[in-house]
Amino acid sequence: MTNILLLVVDSLRADHLSCYGYDKRTPNIDHLANEGTRYENAWVEGSYTAESIPFILSEYLYYQLSANGYTFPAVIHSNPIITRYLEANKLGFINIDLHTQKRFSRLRNLWGILRNGIYRGEARADTINTRALYVMEALGSPFFLCLWYMDIHAPFFPPYKTGIKDILLNRKYLKAVLAENPKIGKDDLSKLIENYDGEISYFDSTLWKLLKEVPEDTHIIFTADHGEEFLEAGNLGHHNKEIPELRHVPLIIKSPHNSPKIIEKPFRFKEFDELILDLSKEGGR
Image (cartoon, rainbow, N blue to C red; front, top):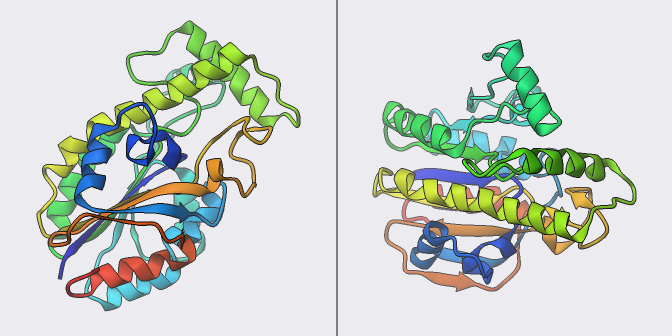
């Protein structure tokens, strides 16, 4: 049996990756795509996490993985929505929640509110990846491990590139997300997109450190739960709409013995658990 590593990047649009035609390079994600199967037209079932997660980590998936010999399927994340979903549905995934809200001082939490306009306690990708390497070793083989990243989710603060103007811009952005008719200047919108791309670039830079340590006999699945809108259909953020900016996500699968290919046929995430279960069987796809 082969290990399965599922990488889910919150809020990641397919059309902001160079392997899907974007003009800013994401070399490590591209490398994964060049060695694996890239789905050109993968569409999620929801425009935000609460809608999408039942199709990514389903009850059916959990019980079938367990039946197929993946005794302790695990999820590492820092998104309270995931913990609420797993607990509400009494799913037996090992839930490793790295959200920092309960572990930092009130002063640091206050700084988070002033900086972002809301409290953020999400772990960065490098923290998720470091924990993942320990968990892989502890689980043994075969393992199923899902890593759920929040770096690209708003507010957008690329590491080491954030100043006062970015803080003020994100506060303006968060107000605009809630408005029926958001108003934001052309320059501000361009800067938001630049910072969104900066978060993608940061995430991409962390990926190779993880993948070089992943056991060779591992299926690696790379995807997202939804995208992000930048006024393409009149809103900011991820409201409930069926538009490509929110529903078209990357889907890349790198398997130990399969040749690279591109699948043009549309793929809906209603079939996602079956895709994973196919991989969990001897040989995979």
